[in-house]
Image (cartoon, rainbow, N blue to C red; front, side):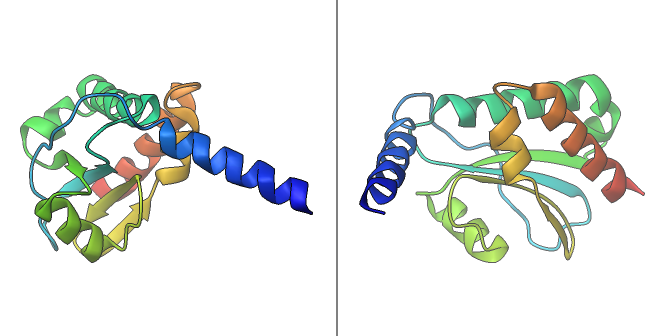
Length: 140
């Protein structure tokens, strides 16, 4: 039992400390009840490989398959730092409590955190599939 707790603490410590490198910044402002689709990525000011991979893979998929919708502002990608006022407001509204990814349109919301952070850096095709399916559902 003690060994299991120590292993769990060690894994949590590694996960928390892995997010100490990367670039900073925000792109856009989350608008509650917006008519368009908003893909909202929450991250910390210092970003890990997973956070950067989620952002890059999201941008890649949007550029390759949803370019027209992005240009027509039907879809917006928003990267928010949890530690800013903008990030705190959006996190509070969406119920986000950590690094996460949500697809939102009006009152509808889909949490893609698991697929995004599990697959973006190792198997991006699985993440693309999950994001593509969510976007297609929201575009209907």
